Length: 478
Ligand SMILES: *[C@@H]1O[C@H](CO)[C@@H](O)[C@H](O)[C@H]1NC(C)=O
Ligand SMILES: *[C@@H]1O[C@H](CO)[C@@H](O)[C@H](O)[C@H]1NC(C)=O
Ligand SMILES: [Mn+2]
Image 1: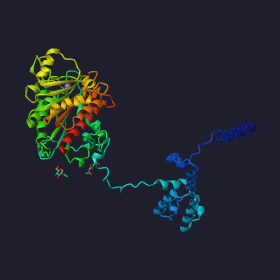
Image 2 (image 1 turned 30 degrees about the vertical axis):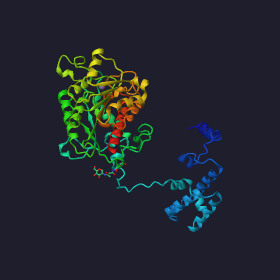
Image 3 (image 1 turned 120 degrees about the vertical axis):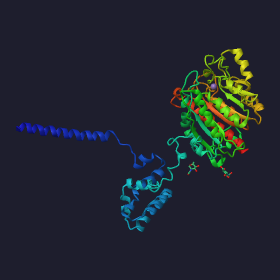
Image 4 (image 1 turned 90 degrees about the horizontal axis):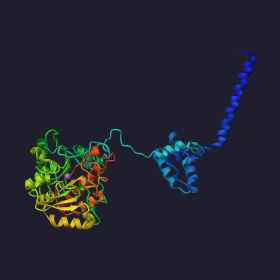
């Protein structure tokens, strides 16, 4: 390397160094770092007035971490922190001095300790359990969004297992994953799974929103057994074959019978059953099983469709197999004699197929009609009292087709109809029925593949079941 090259290189390096230094100066001159202490970065700006800022400053400066020297034990430090927190300004220095004298540390030593250390002490108040203690993580019912899902975190055992038939069941929740009786959009076979999943936030705690104003339902908490002592079990799903409806529905029927045969301390001595569908065809079997235990039941059918269609009008005609579907099951329930004399459709609004014939046939099946728009005419009280005049003490079964809700409130269903109830309206009517002798119920036609990913429809279904639980428990507590 020639000399002038060397001189040149030194010159370049020197220029660069000066440049860097200048940069540094420019940086620190023009960008002021935020005036944030470690305390601020962890807790945020908790303190604003001069007095508090001053205290915080003193706390930071004081250190109080002589624990690291083994001079002040943990309890002393904790006590000191407590004292410091509540000390008046004029007491603080004195407090620090006292500590330093008592522990043979110089005051300077205390002041010199880094605020970070002080802060770590101040912060570490978390008392974790022993490393082999799992008592707080072994309880499924305290698992809000994890764990093996049952409806509302209720306990589960397989109620269809004959070996467990001696287990008490007061209220059973069962799934009927079936959708091969559907005329339009399928998918309700995934209903039970989705409803359980949407019900995972039901964990107990009295809800002031349960029931209508002034209702005894306000005080009921299904998820807190100590408040009612009923044994509420999620029985699981009845396996229902997708290949032959005759076999699938028979499987459901046998499943229901086995649930009903469990001992129960309910007033009737019979478990009350809540079924999660499934398309609406399943209700023929839930009604059959209920009828065999209670006799004729009054059916409150919340639906936008009549579902009493004569198979000659809907689906049937070519084969008998086609005759039973989710629009004709109430025709059969009537024909088989499961229904009381007076029953209700609530929220009706879908078109008839053969208008005059359908109306006449529906009435022959024993149904009174409350349309969705009747809510505008009669109001809640009008509708509720109309129903209660008829139900009196008779055993009542409520079947809620989630399409009774407006599609805006329940898009995930088989056959949507515009102009339905909102979730609130449906719940106000259901809860308004407090005092009826509700022996069973279902919520059907929840089709998760057509739901939104915010689970609107299955969430609505969870509230229907929640409402059933309230009504059932109320009858038992009476
Ligand atoms: C599990 O947690 C629930 C709800 O907190 C409580 O009622 C129940 O007693 C707990 N079960 C056990 C076995 O600790
Ligand atoms: C709660 O129910 C159980 C049966 O499930 C019964 O043995 C017990 O006596 C009841 N407790 C109260 C306080 O009623
Ligand atoms: Mn229906």
